Image (cartoon, rainbow, N blue to C red; front, side, top):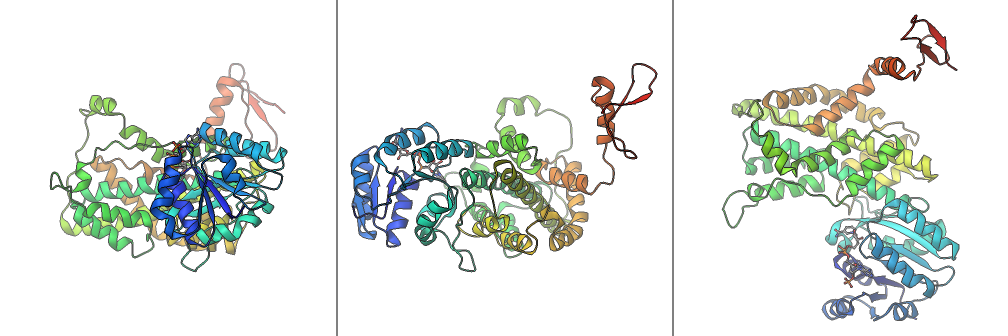
Length: 478
Ligand code: NDP
């Protein structure tokens, strides 16, 4: 009984997390269903810190100090239930189980409830940063009881990434599923960010006529400004890479059909249920999906329309600057949608989520880490009740400056036949919010016409119906 914490599930994420914990001075008991992985972890990295290898769940639990703290890093879904089922009977009241896998927040809510009934704290912790992050410092989004968080905080803070101001990239997000919910939204925003960068690439390549190398330079320049982010940086790196086999730009050697593991889809499904329009994230999920429909694309490749033609080089330079504006504005819209979703989730599930703190813990370690997130943090610090990020004074000023170029980019893309679902969905969202009157009035009238669904009026309180099939007189329907 000497270990500070246990880790079960020693694939890439679990073993890197265990090493990170050990490197930071914690004694870590390690276990994997297939014991060979436990042995090789200790053989290869045993000198990095204090590991206690365990061959069975019983051995792992027996090696932990009380109250026991155990992290499971196994495949999300049934495997997580299986592992919890195996460990729960071995644990006691007050022990803490952390699920660091990519669980759906609804599963986390269920597991938390089940374990709470046995007096065991269950912490669904979103972990972002991939395998490198797990080893060198991820962003950690724990949900669960405040008591459980307090018992984990020193350890989590020691292994989490550091934000540029030195703050650890972890905080108690909220109770039960809040951490995994927030992680899900993070991934949705990640999809949108990637799609927007992809659209910028597509336009720079086909309309500005730049080579991947030149685009890498443009991205490098943007990465030193307000678009400074990990995803921008790695995009530039990818674009300078040459394929060893063909000698061509690596990006040209990769099949243009994007895959997904499902967290983007979860975000959109959940958003639909919550009634939150996350159109930028949804378009990014659809864009990946459409790219993968090879048969459909082949059957449609003869459809008429313009083929992109490259511009003159001066015009291309100006266009690149406009794309920077469009990318920034569209990114801001996706983030506004993501934060709207977190606010709605918090309300629906009764979580006390500090929306500024979420931005703060995404400044380092995670895939969407970016200078921009400090601005989001500051926006919520200035006004915790902010209805939408777009209404923040600084952001709204920037949108004002960007919107002309943003429109020009969407128009140019459309003229050249280059799809920009992310840029244009974001712009439509922006214009919808700005609009004085929306055609939703006509929608309501149509609904009343075919289904007597009723409508409200602009000039009077109450609910009304028009007798469309009869004398077209209006009656009260409330
Ligand atoms: P995998 O998701 O590939 O899971 C493999 C691990 O799960 C192995 O340790 C395996 O044990 C164990 N496992 C599978 N089924 C069972 C079972 N029924 N009972 C016991 N153990 C089981 O590993 P990763 O390291 O990639 O990911 C771990 C978790 O972290 C996942 O939930 C993933 O979604 C999440 N995650 C992953 C990220 C990444 O970048 N890869 C980033 C953030 C989160 P065995 O060796 O015996 O097969």
